Length: 164
Image (cartoon, rainbow, N blue to C red):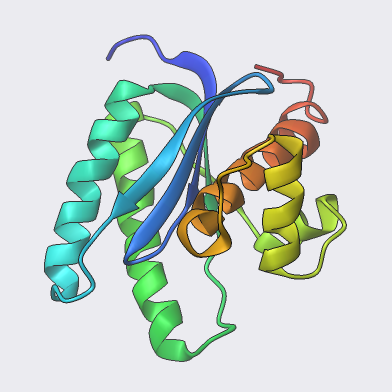
């Protein structure tokens, strides 16, 4: 096992577009999305997701991985699908980095930034990081991952005095 870097990888998991962000301390170093064709069957999507996530975790090996907790806001079918992807992500983090990922509720993130909706959170992150070319449709998953990492760093790591 190679030495892990002091960093945070944050994942906003979806079956089609998983947003991710990589921070070292409170500095955003990289971000992007794991895109999967929506027309594929679920097992193929899960396989593609795992391979892409493993590559990401090997490129940015970190001591901290935070994953958004699934929620049943839309419907039970969506919750089940997100749970499958979250399970794959948790297993991949354990297998690749040998750490337990931290699961964070999106309500905690919204409360931290004092917003109610995804759209409001997107605008806050867009402004904080001066992402002038970002639009909600294309970049909301990345912004959610960035917001989650900031919240995790300030609310979990700093408060636990286990700073990175």
